[in-house]
Image (cartoon, rainbow, N blue to C red):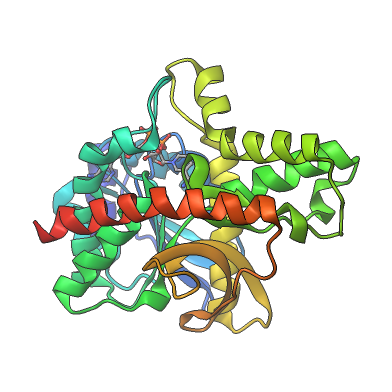
Length: 338
Ligand code: NAI
């Protein structure tokens, strides 16, 4: 790859005839925003994923260093780095899966919506590249506010004539990961055995854990329900405050992103019964986008599951979530249509 060699030259490495090839079977994955707080551990974990044969690391800063570092890991995936807008298209050509953690994170006192002005433009640019260079790739969108950036991506793809709602997924996996952890703590269970569906969206009250549907079946007191719902909804803020200005969740997010990307890749491979929650174009409610359980297959989303029976507490939460979600979705759509 010419860009890769260019980077080797600039970093002063001796050029060799690199014959490394991705495994014959295996997927090509690009990470956009790969030098960031999420991007770096995400790149490391994807390099360890045996389903990945080629890993492209794109950022507007520092991607050569991250690429050099990650590329020394003795795992199967071939790693290539891409720096700056002029290399975006090379980073994207031929990709099966594109993961996007590019953009600014929150500082204390900020909501995810406060990030809109900066991140909306970044997501737009990156999605225009995807539409041009790998229109059939599955897209995992992490950049916040997810409730608005997913509608933005959809509008960009519609404009380009490449939109397939089955391939665009907003990553809400961290809400599920947190919910599993916090429920396990309260119930004295192993978090690996807990499965909490989290529906709605990815910000504040739009994050709606369905505690009545937890597996294994658990019953919670009203106090436990309040505590868990609030802690799951504010888990991100808990980390933002603890980091005190140094950003938001990065390590748990990278873990969650890889768990989700791995599910997408297993679906692409044809594994049966791969189900995760994600924020997707949906008819589960009257809103055009909604997070719920989806089954992943060879072409992206194969099936979107209905919410199932909700208790009164969850029905009230759902109404609150829908009200805020409707506004965030509209804000994203208007950003492109204006
Ligand atoms: P960060 O600031 O550490 O890293 C962001 C990276 O994006 C930087 O390396 C930056 O150079 C890069 N970037 C900026 N503009 C770019 C462009 N035009 N093209 C490519 N790369 C670009 O931020 P961090 O902590 O990694 O967070 C990234 C995003 O993920 C934020 O928007 C944050 O709110 C979001 N996030 C989402 C979560 C979720 O559950 N979906 C959880 C945690 C964070």
